[in-house]
Structures are given as structure tokens and as C-alpha cells.
Length: 310
DNA sequence: CGTGTGGCGCGCCTTACCTCA
DNA sequence: CGTGAGGTAAGGCGCGCCACA
Image (cartoon, rainbow, N blue to C red):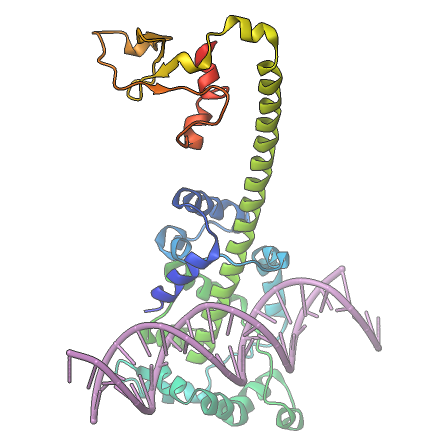
């Protein structure tokens, strides 16, 4: 259901061609995933192909690598995520497709606030060894997931980047978390993933810019050389007037004068006499009358019309 | 069948907390 | 021990989708 939105994001992300998108996507697993972490199976799934990149800070590149380090600290603290009392109640409410979370998010704010102020918070606070006084002051207490919880969530994330209510409930129950916590974790995880994707895409774009700049330089240099060649008298003397040159639009063979005798016939075109189409004038000194794709240019060392004259 | 409404999940941005150097 | 930076759980808000009246 969110795919539409994500697809929209994709179109917003980068104005890549489809090919480039593919290329970018292929870059991801090796760049994003920390060396100690195998690429998640979901990379082949759908996420990367449907999730767009956006420019963000570069700091998040470290996130994944830091995750392992960071989880160290999880074990240091007390397990603050014991199954809250309300979790069971929430599960009990799952009878409709909307289920728990729906009922939770139905009153999202009140639910969150309610959880914060009542027994959940009490339990969380007590599990962290926080006194009641502290607990009463602020309802927002940072909960750190344990290493095991994070690992399970990561595994689950590899399978699917979104959870349906049943999966969420099951996961929450398994981890001893509130469904809302699981939901939040997945939301944040998706955000982190997207951030990293953006980083990769930015790098890719940078390389593209560099390559294009280089190529632009090269082409300008080439134009310079050709211009100087053009003004060389020796060059003129060896040439028939450009206006007499014609090229068959079909086979692209160059013919000179009214005889239409093709010159410079490519080896692969040697064969039965070719019926040339209406010859088109070949202007050697200006740009091609019809745009030529980069790919076409890329196959040649120099400007196409001149290349044929060599 | 088109329309208004409420529920729900998500993305995005932000805040608050936590850990570490 | 204090402090700033970085990471992350969670809050808030808006949006789109869907079911239903």
C-alpha cells in the first residue's frame, strides 16, 4: 500500500535513466553493507528498486558499521525492554485486520501518551532502575534495544521492510517489545536505509559528473584539433569540395559526385550491389543534420564524417 | 456511482536520550 | 568530570489509501 508513495519517491530521487538506476542499485550491496555484514536478501527483493535516494548527510554511512560496535553498549545496560503489561492486552485485541496497531494508531497520540504515563513507563522505569520521581518528570525515556533484539529485527528487516499487523505483533511478542516499538524500529530502519542509498547515489552521481567533465574536456580538445586541421591549406588541397559529398542514409556510405560511387565501404557491407537511397548532402564542417546518439559517437574515435575521410 | 469521513500506516522532520571519545 | 558529536528511539505532523456510510 505504501509502494505508490515509494515509487513516487523514486521518481523524485534522481533523474537517472533506467540504466543508470540499475547501475546504482547494483552498487548498493557492496557499498552500503558493512563488511562484516552479508548483503541482506531484501536487496534482491524490492526495496532498493522502489526506494529513492535523497541527499543527506554523510554521517550515516557509518551507521551500519557502527551498529555492531554500538550494540556493545546494549549489553552494558539493563534490559529495559521486558514485555510490558499492556502488550498482552494489545494482542488480545487482534480480531480484525486492523488489529492491535490499528487500534493503537487509531489513537496514536493518546496511545503514546497513555503508554508513557502509565504502567508501561512505570515498568520501563523500574526496569532501568529509575526512581519514581525521575519517572514522573519526563515521559520520554530512551530505550535501548538489546543486541539480540536488534539482531532479530535486522533479520526480519532483511526479509521484508514493512510489517503487516500480524508480523508486527508476532515480532513484538517474540522480542518482548510493544508493537509500537517494533513499528518505530522499522520506520527508523527504513529511514536509515534510505539515507545510505542516498549516499551511494550521490557518490555515483559524483563519478558521473567527473566522467562527463573529463569527456567534455576531451571532446573540446578534439574539436580544437579538428578546427586547426580544417584551416590547414594542405588539408584543403587533398579534399574534394564538401558539397560534392553525399552519403547514403541507409548504409551511410559516402559517395562523391553525381556518380554516387560509394567510397570507404565497410568490409561487412561488401556483397551484392547495394541500391542506395536518396543521397543526403554531407556537411563536413558543421554539426550533423540529425542528432547522433552518444552511443554512436562512442564507437568512433573521431567525428563521424571526418572519420570516413581518413 | 460519486462523495465525505474516519482509521490506519507510512515518510519525513525533529526531539530527547544515550554512549563514547 | 564536563562536553560535544554521533547514533537512535520516539514524538509530531501531513499525506495517501482504504473501507464504509
